Image 1 (cartoon, rainbow, N blue to C red):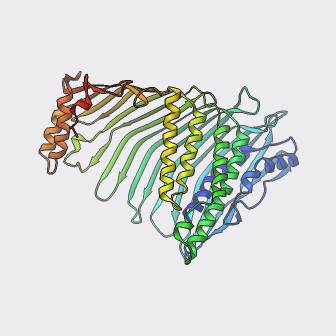
Image 2: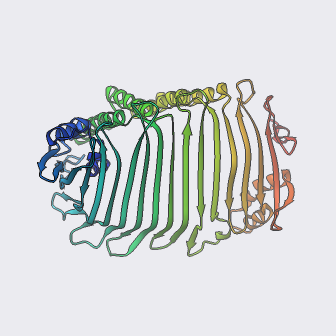
Image 3: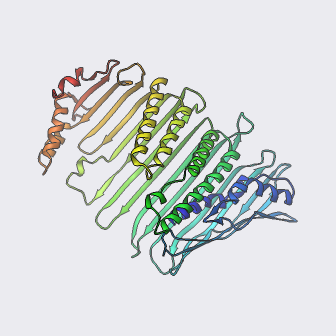
Amino acid sequence: MTRSISILLGAVPLWLAGGALAQTSPDAAALRDGLNEMLKPILAIQVQQQPLFTGPVKVESGWDGATVVFPGIDLTLKGSEKDAKSVALRCDAQTYRAASTGAATWRLESSQPLNCVAEPEGEAKVTLTSRALQAHFVVDLGQKLFTEGEWRADATTIAQDGRPGKVTINTLSGTSQLRPAADPTRHDAIFKMVLSGLSAFDEKGVERFSLGHSDYDMTADGMDVREIIAAYGDYFDAYAVMMEGMVAGLADPKADPKAAGQIPADVMKKMMDVTKRIAMASGDGGKFAGTITDLRIKAPDVQVTIDRVRFAEGYDGAFTPNGSGMMEVEMGGLALAPKPPFAEWIPTDATIRMNASGIPWAEVGTAYLAVMEASADQAADPAKAQQQMAQAMMEIGGILRRAGSRLDVTSFHFGAPEAAIDLGGSVQGKDAAAHGVTADLDLRITNLDGLIKFLQGMPDGAEAAAGLSMAQVMGRQATTADGRPARDYDIVVDDAGKILVNGTDLAAMMPKQ
């Protein structure tokens, strides 16, 4: 049930912005036919052998333009257990006004609020509504794609009738833009989503979760938008078939639970093929970034506050043997209330920045798909699946070693009020090296001495303190810029396989067998 609903939720953005995928022509009939043709992979999605959408896109012409109606949702979902109750789900169709803005462009606008209703059998209905929605999309008929779009929903609420528990969002908005790439079949895509003022209330009406602001940005270089739309339609189709088979198996008391949970080989092959198509259509490079501010979790016994979290990851050169990648994570202002006894030693801020180079993304991606395929077979033969997954992971390692791939750690910092860990340096893949890699890293642990003393004073902390004492002995004494004591470690992994810490071979310090 939950997974079937997830399919529906995943389709909501397409339902809201269906026109953004359209193939059109200047007259209403051609606009209608073009929309339905381009949206065919999405409109054909079925859930539990029912059409996800209520029908095709409809277009009616008028003196001042045209009216475009994108279909709604109206279906009943069955539970995965024999006696499970059904859920009826309905979402209103979305109506847009379309006006010609040039020889080959149209603008679609809508102010129709969101309205979805889920009615579990024998229970109060759950509604998804917004007080207002403003949306517009611009379509370029020459490119047969919507080149830009913008939408904003105000006062969005998810609630169940007669119950105080609910989720509210003050503002949820998004923008999108497609620009022609060098390849005429591909486009550079820019997407942004912003959320402000999210709150979740429990069954007593008490706010348990809140988020002040969140934004998500994506850019993709050379994306084949039409292929991605078609591929996602096939993916949802395969996913629905998989879930229907699993639901039927779980509902049959005579069925083997392990067999019921197994993904059929033909379905898995189709899903893997679609995944490959999506990867090939996603473009030669891209970047994804998000920021969260003012996060509050208010459980009955503890409250967690995080002032800011930011993440970013990206890749380039996907179709070359010498690609690159990056990852950044930042976190600040973590606080717990009431404070635990070890609060001064819990990291309150963190920064991670890493860059990778010399990555043959196509080879790595093929090997990673082998990991996914093996993981799908765990229910049928866990031992065999684990072996196949291990072999696929080893193959990824081999690809990176042979390519001489490199990871540069420009920042790796975790800071607590009383201590900190900082790491920097590089790791280089090298097929001829004893360990397959060489490394040159600099590690600093601030106030390790104080942490050891703290652990020694804690119940059951003696063992951890003893382990850190060895690291304390190996470290080189240092002082931070603000005068705190620290231990420094120069870590080197050489071609011969030696692991040196401040010039000392780590193997020489290990107990003899």
